[in-house]
Image (tube, rainbow, N blue to C red):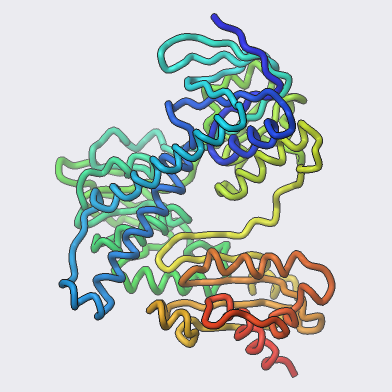
Length: 464
């Protein structure tokens, strides 16, 4: 058994692991990263964010081709299969792996591929993919092993018609009808993807509102556009059992309903990848979903062990995970790069996409904060008209008296890009973070960013 010595060992090469490893390395520490697959990038690159967003982009292009009259000059509407669009995602994954592999090489970070577990607080044993066992000694360790779909014991995921959000990427055909159980972010995104391919989708939601953490108006808009694209949303439903058939699947609901489809996609929760880490050897406990508790510096109950990313729970976003990993390493190397990551915009890549930051109307009303609303509808924006993207709006919530920006909510074309302008302004001080900034700033024309000026004037016109 070979023994190696490092300052910092990072378990996992997804966004959190990469952020931690790069920050520690640039601070002069000797760093190693361990991942249980033979390629870097973590679930984000191979199974989650990158493939699903690449799929969504391809489907959105197909929808544009099939609905925009200008394309009829070069051909009639075409049907594309799920494996067709998956090929483009595979191209992006390969490029991401190549880029990230070069990052580790340039920063002299050693990579090990295999299953890692704690022998004690400063010792990691790695069973490499070739069967060789390595031992890594480290002063500090960062757990960034991510998460995987939660799988209830009473569901047979080995059945060829039952998938989760990882295994759906191995789907070799395009179902005519698909049940998606779980209407969270992942379920809603895949509902958009499959319905965009012409699949009839039953989206099962165990709550009474789609993505209830969103502003109500945005949630309602998403529901409308999913339904408009033949997604049947069933609220307040829970499964009783899932029956696999030779040519499909039947979902039995507690309400007595039975739904038959060609396949079922399970999107109801995730669990932290902690079960094989040997955390009992260092006294670190996990909750029922395999997640680790950390303090504001991302330190676990073991003083030299940190954790970041999906493995610690909320917000379980790739963007936040990278910053959490970087901050965890910042706590280790003490180079002023630590911050508690809480300024996290929501980005949901449905069709159309959604992004938001700050308070919702419901929250402001419950808190009795006197707010007003400014809106810009994309159907009136020149850039949206040029792009043939009329669906959507930008909504700014601001204080009636101080004009401070309290929330930014965007639905439609480039929403995940547009929200960052509002994020930047909300983080300023004094008048710089008020509605006046958008009124007194000249925006390029035509742009989607100009929606902020339109929404600001709309909001000011509501004051008296």
